[in-house]
Length: 146
Image 1: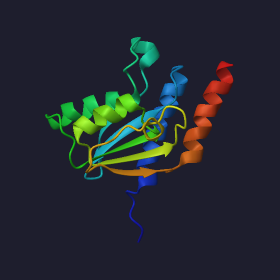
Image 2: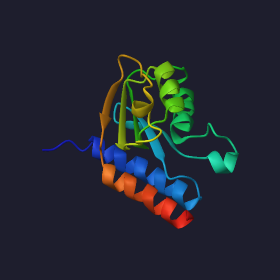
Image 3: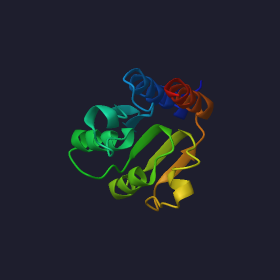
């Protein structure tokens, strides 16, 4: 029997968050944080609504997860995010010491890999999970805006 709690299973939940952002006119990036197969944080971009350039999905998720855990370190946690984190988010993820990051679509222009931003040395990274679905939502969003 195949395990139910796969990276795809949780990325679908992050994609729901991205769709919520899309409906609000926000850049459709969604994130969740999971520990022991339990979602402890859900978020999406809120930069327009909050008038805050730091209100990325990942930043919102980090704060929610830290509040849930009652501490600043996210050891044992996994972030699922529909778009590769930017260098700001990667920096915050570094300091959170998150154990694993799983992202969907690559951000060829502003992603942490392109920018050369380092994560914590113990953080595992998995990329390309549901990348096409994640990228398609972003393309649709920007097509509608033009």
